[in-house]
Image 1 (cartoon, each protein chain N blue to C red):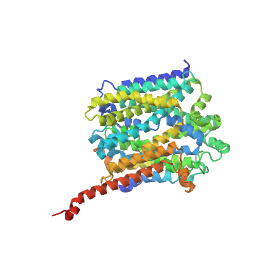
Image 2: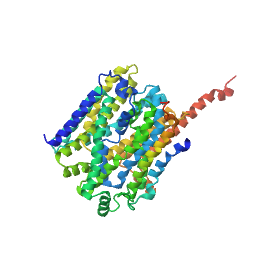
Image 3: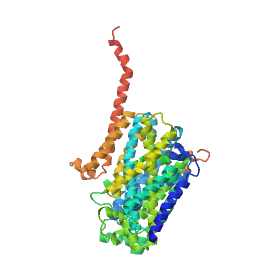
Length: 65
Length: 497
């Protein structure tokens, strides 16, 4: 459970620390500069992470609300 | 009336109609007007929370920022995404406390947690002061949109007056339900328009995304990433962090939490909202596409990038549709801000002075304050000033000062005291104001520091001052209290027996 919740830290690391290493135009990905592509990818990954956290959180079982 | 103006007028009428209909014969008590009786399911809460990102800021400011500065605009993709992650853990306890104690406003939360109506007064004042520039921003955007998309048939000034009157009217009648219902139309319109333009412009003018970025790179090398100096990586990270923390500290976003039917609704939204953030990618692409097509926009005119390019590209009736969507992006958040500022005033300032006032009386005061808030914002809008992003960033620095006291109030052991919370918020806000008024940066304040530190967002200084004062004052109060408890025992030996 706590391991799953710890996944929530990854987007922070990716978006706050990532730019220090990826602030460059090339290589482009789907036509986008590397930095922009990195952020777009992490928006998608963040949504996936939140879906996993939501699914495994016992608070979200249907019988409790 | 030209064909473009028709679309815009229809949008204003649609907002007015939906706003009035939202009430549907419900008796409007304070609880209905401010938090819709805590009855909203996931879709409406989603729209109220997403209301925060799809304001005129996203529409004009986002594309204008991309046009004017390039890479640094990527921060708008990141900050809300991180705020949503935080929201999954932070908002459910806030919602639970608000339900159990029947809270109406953000300031109520601080009043309850710290058992201090005076702290509520401080939080309300900070909230209202931050909300006014946010409202000015919506009105400014509205004026720009109507003037350009209507091909000058209606000037910015009458447009601001009309828009403000529409929002004021339906907020007074329907409260937060009016905002939620008009948000349905707004989000549908903005989604279609932004995605269409974000795909169409790069294809039409460049033949594709890759070609567009290549052309920009050739004309302005390095423009689509972060610059070495100024709005550098250091600026970027600190700004994203600061605005992510401040995101839900906006009184109207905070209030939107209260409207949820249960806490699962909030967690569900925390999962879905990051995907919605992707729509801002299209806003960024629109602004970047404009760089080589409508060059030479300078200063505050960068906010016009989206509409200048649209006017250049499309027939008037298409521009009218885009303008209609734009008008809704100004009216909906504008109405939420009006409602929130009025609630803070009536429920936390007026009521603090008139303790015996009934809920019905407070509601009447709130409704009367709505047009007053609108007038104040109209005054500042017409008086002129900074670009949209600059205004928004200052408001953010203000509301972010509420974050430390809020987080500490959620902790199980209530270590922070009301005196500490109040002193911290006051010190943080004073720091923001001093920095903004003097146009200071960390560099001008501390010239000896390394250049990387100088580029950090100045809001961080204010937040640091805030935390230090909060901790010091809380510790002082606790120490004094502890001594008082111990005092009789320690003084006993010296007392004459």
